[in-house]
Image (cartoon, rainbow, N blue to C red; front, side, top):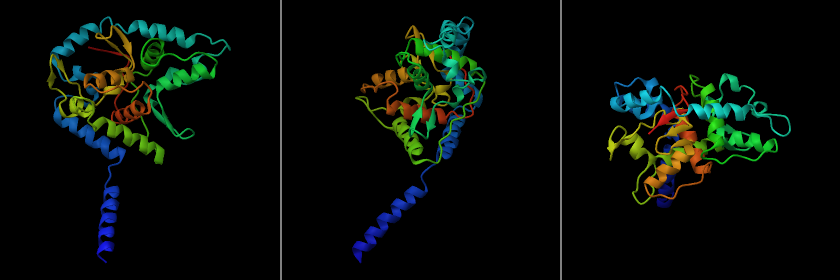
Amino acid sequence: MKKFSIALSVMLVLVTSFAVQATPDDDLKAFRSYFTKKFPNVPVADFINGVYAIDKPSREQWESFEEFPSYDIAIDNGKARFNKKFANGKSFASCFPNYKKGIKQNYPYFDKETGKVVTLEAAINKCLTDNGEKPYKWKKGPITEVGAYLAYLSRGNKINIKVPNNPDAIAIYNEGKKFFYAKRGQLNMACADCHYYYAGHRIRADILSPALGHPTGFPVYRNKWGGMGTLHRRYAGCNKQVRAKPFKAQSPQYTALEYFETYMSNGLEENGPSMRK
């Protein structure tokens, strides 16, 4: 009888835990509420501008850079690449028929057929390989140019990421959520430490940006890089900074993190490509 009571108690704890587990929508409401309370003077729509939404001196410097943005070249090059014919006579337009209306707001998305999440970069490279072309490298170079062009066409469109009621989709979302809050590296830090709990604080000469709106401006031109980079390039850089071994771009870990982070920015406008420090 005692064993039965213990087993029943354990089962009740598990059932209760499952029942109260937050849904993606619950997470989104709590995430947004946290940042709007933390930065009450920042309009929600302005979080797409990262640290420039919360620090006036940084914003003034950024606005001067935006008069002649360094990413303009990437947009022009991306447009040329997008419209260039493949050897088979097709182009990127055959893979992205609605590109003129803007499509970036729908990425990443869960693909029911493969049971995986598809990022925009993955879709760009799949278009190349499906048409007999060589894929681009993942973190910088041509993939950021095509991405910049598609992001530019998507400016003003609101992010609209879905997490369907599918075990695989929910599992990937939860993996991304876990990654965001999990400690790692020799410094034992999480994404959330810098960009959630301590957003707005200084780390040496830099101000930590809020996680809300993080994916909206990618691909970005960073002064530190002296060029363009994808979101996964930035993830790898963050992991290195906490002395953790970075995962490869488009790895399941970074794809899941992007899925979670982008869902947390649902309803915000796309404003890529953009400039960052």
